[in-house]
Image (tube, rainbow, N blue to C red):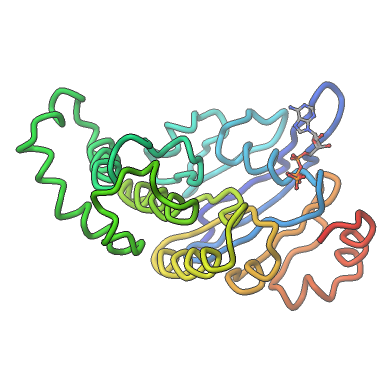
Length: 249
Ligand SMILES: Nc1ncnc2c1ncn2[C@@H]1O[C@H](COP(=O)(O)OP(=O)(O)OP(=O)(O)O)[C@@H](O)[C@H]1O
């Protein structure tokens, strides 16, 4: 077993309120790991700590055995740990192809002037076409991102994230606001891209969690309540009580 991401004693206090309290987490390489819990459990705060959008009050985070506790989101992205599903990451006025090209260019760290040359840009096209096909957007390649449906915009975000060639993807509520047909499409896509990568996701939709996850960590009141596969956690009296107790889900 190889642990790719590890949190030890991770804690976040907001003016005396402890939103995340000494949480330990180990994410195994090549797995899909879900973070769930009732409203206010601290999932978003914990996820923001892991992705470095928030700085912890205490504790330590390691990625591939490297201490990343003090690093920036850009710094961890360089190491291959990339957070997706920030709609703003997609440029609405640019086409699907242009969006993926920019991600490819960003990965190579080339300057803005350099990528503006049509000749050089077109070199990225073969790779870009591959990622676009992978996420099922082939027929929309020349559509402006702003014209895509919500589910397809999210597929485009996955394509731009994949273009960065991450070893680990962090997905923040990938199914939020999606119609059922998009949920099925994005689930299949996550399963496909997880084949040779590690995925950690916060997700409210429990049937998606049951369907996709190898391992699930349940948070409640800022602490780990239970951990295991779906069968194990759904039998846990503490988990059942935490969900019923808040009238959630
Ligand atoms: N910036 C902040 N300042 C003060 N309190 C905060 C801040 N961010 C979160 N909290 C509090 O921390 C607790 C955990 O919030 P968090 O959003 O992490 O929970 P969550 O599990 O993601 O909930 P939900 O499922 O509703 O999104 C909540 O009580 C929230 O009010």
